Image (tube, rainbow, N blue to C red):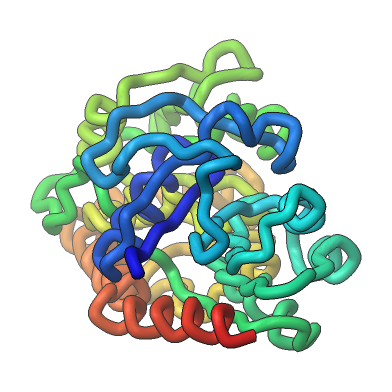
Length: 312
């Protein structure tokens, strides 16, 4: 039997990662076409032409043995109502935590959960309602994942809609301070947040002093991976560590954790101006995230999860 997977594209970068993961396990991978609109929750398709995808698939053509990936729990009951009784895996990319999931995740039939944040993985395990797994995914795409050897002079923040996700007054202060010269990317609001093509952003990130990731939650945070895998140190707020429950980031070892105040961030900036210290923290973060994303280990976990869902 041919292994087939269909994905509701939730994120234009994450779909390539998911497709690569599935393809490495022998799947032929398709993106859900427009016939899924109005069926799955928050249907999305950016019509990317990716080599990891074998094309698009309609809901009528999707075989019962196909593996369907989504991130929205309401898609489960909607697909079941349309007669699809095959395996479904929710890959939790929405910025929601365990409390929300406990209220909204109601598995029906062959359903599994893949968490990319430790907090979500713990919440699902405690619910004990379906096969589940947690790991950070491999980062697949045009990112130079080698350790950088030079540091820059400006902070960089990457978060879309920082006004809704972040503390813009602190970011503005850091933008205007000559020691931090923060650059904000992702698109507004605020209106000074810029958008850059992916490769240009990667280069700008690699040339920065450090990433300031002023965000309360991630699953797991592609921008975090993009910084860490290039050896760029990351400055986190305490809320990020607490809410994601990410156990492998340690303040002063492979990242810096500071309160969301200009003076506290500037103290971290001054430490990171030392090239030796900057490269040490960056290299430690890179090693830690590389280990968390190790596909030689995580591919076994993913394969076992899929088989457990099929047996359920």
